[in-house]
Length: 388
Image 1: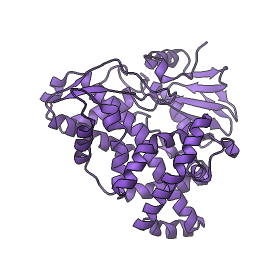
Image 2: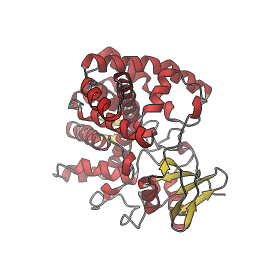
Image 3: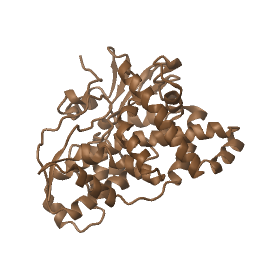
Image 4: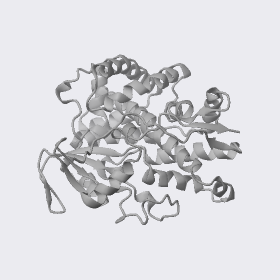
């Protein structure tokens, strides 16, 4: 029986499975897991754009026992909400993005590389990728060093808030960390006065009080930190792997200033950090004569859609010059399109460009990459490199 759900740590090449399903069962009913799995570009686009395909609840009636701080975060994230709640949360998230201070990554990267030095080897994932995106966001909102350090050291535990099926140990960690991080973020937003202008706007538009607006601001800034830790880490990891697995002479010969950016964008299509997302049908949906019934769960295999030959020429080839690489679905589309997409691409581009400009030799020391035990994301555990 074909399985649609597996841990990325347990499969060497998920793309071979995606390719098989794309051509044999692009719309597949998984009887074992009781869900529809969509592997084609058109199928994923239809659902992503559908107004009757909702983000599923991950903790209905708080059956997981999250404390008040963790519950506020989970219930108010733009990426996990639907309808008018999503519209308001998205507006708050856009406000946060528009008020981020522009940060240069060079100094942060230089410090992290120095701290991560361990003889001839450096673990790119743990020394840089797990920290730099989060640090950049924190500095963009002027968090002090002490609070930044606490959040950076503990954000990994809080990311588990996004997992539908949590262990009791994970819930305990989330509850322990959520209260403290929520308090630190709230304190910084109050001290900065960032929410004052938004309170007036949303209060008039949606009849929302100041306390609710602040809660939305806190939750969605924490959401940005979570996203930076997971997806930001994955993009920095996967893009570097693509560069190191290619002929570096091309990098040396290239005088095009956007070369690294094209590598990053093609990585998002070819080897994205996020492979799947989920929806639930709130009304019947017809997909290529197949009826997805109201209440049915849907798994969108975005990493498969990104390699659909009906959308991308020679999709199994890593080609930075393909003219529609930016049409990948890694950031989603429609109402739930990731607001951090431009931030993520710019951050990864700046970091990798500085890395290769400042170091004459960068080599991969171990090409046997292990991945985290996640089903929706393909995140390397470690990438050992040498830098000169």
